[in-house]
Amino acid sequence: MSTNDLPATTVEVTCTVNGESVQLRLDPRESLLDVLRERLALTGTKKGCDQGHCGACTVHIDGRRVVSCLTPAVQADGQEIRTIESVAGPDGTLHPLQQAFVDNDALQCGYCTPGQIMSGLACIAEGHTADDDQIREYLSGNVCRCGAYVGIVAAVRQAASAAREG
Image (cartoon, rainbow, N blue to C red; front, top):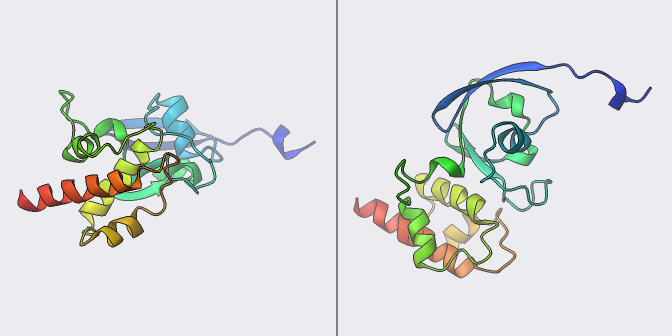
């Protein structure tokens, strides 16, 4: 008998996802990424490398950014999860950072964009936007295979400046 044949123990998890209370019964081995995408149909968060290297799966847990592919979903118990689906306004109005991505041509293929935006939001919220080097350092955990880094840094700089001006 291999360990794959053992029945999985399930764990009850209650959390808030994008402002809505969610109760789930989870296999403790499930990643937060897989639960968001496969159980909650929140497919905006992308599965890239599935090893925590690319940042495409970045979400926020209680305001802190995490790579959801390496985060056990059971750690979300009692936490507030925010995904890219919650960033735009309820009427579809783009968040200033999303608009800045459009303005600065920071999208290209778009696969990395959700993770880049979630990291950019954390970068701005935590005040790591003093200069382009600081923005680049803070976003260094997010890989863009199209090489749109110049536009991404410009977008974060633009949104941070707008946030400071109120």
